[in-house]
Length: 465
Image (cartoon, rainbow, N blue to C red; front, top):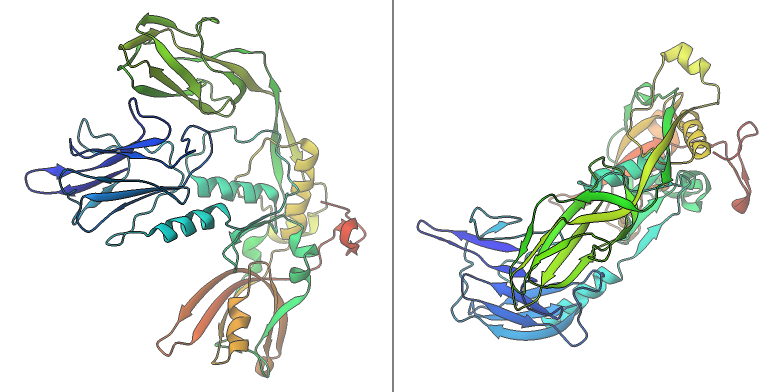
């Protein structure tokens, strides 16, 4: 990581890094020759392949620094001179300086507290919250044969694709208890809180509706044809999937990391760490301390090459061998349920979302039928704004609502008494400190699913998609 302060005559930066001859229980903090080396607590290992929580604090004197590894304190180190971080600009990634490196390929999350040094107890609590963060992840009905089959450059975009691939009714969100939740496409039909009303808004004694619901035309959501071209793959024999084509020079005691990706973009499995016995590289000069891979399957791997402390290392002909997982065939699947009535009334409306195509053809068939069965006549949507009032009961009825909850809305004056599923929520507190929540909702309906584990049979003509 790097923090740079821009001045008229110079930039000041520091980096926290794994580098050089330092062990897997040390981190080097580099600050333009004003450097320190942190010792991590006993048992620490940065190369064990597991995620770890690292917290570094700089005290008010600008010189005293502490490090915490997975909530446990490491060494306290003192910079020779104060580290200049006032009015700094955070630089994520490579800075403009030709020798200032800030690579983020091994970072998962990153946060900065300005003007506040985390205490030892807070560092421990932070780690515990990260490790023990509750996750409620359903298994899903769409099973992928391989994933991922292309590089993931945007995590949220990939999550949206996974949700779209699961099908209509699937949800991914942060729950009211701050847990990460994924619900499969059957959840709204079989989960108790989606089948039974969880709260009533409007009417006597309930949290009040602020204004009439804002309805959205269900015709805009119509999908009456769904086709998916699914990919079938075959695992090939162990072979060369990547080569560098130039020499690699590694300074004595240093490590060079190279990202290897197959030219054709095919994923692979069973990758083997390069070795001289199988002709994966040739040593031109020096001695190899180690060559390792960060994983053995996927769309790319990182090759880490470390030289011994005694000499510069030069190797040539570096290659990576693995088993490519190549496309064997493409099969187009289409919905089988009848949507002719919707097509005649509304014209052809196809499914617009991008999905992952490495799925079984029969699962793809279920997916297509689920999409058209859910959306061929559109899904009524509405925004409903509710005021919590000034009682604990009515406020809690808002704060406890989760995505997928079934709610009842009563507006006696205009004869409205409807049930909705909550798809999203926005909360505000006005100047009078009153809680207001806007629910984005979708009208409930009875899905045609036959599910043995909760004995739900809502329709006779379609079983199980």
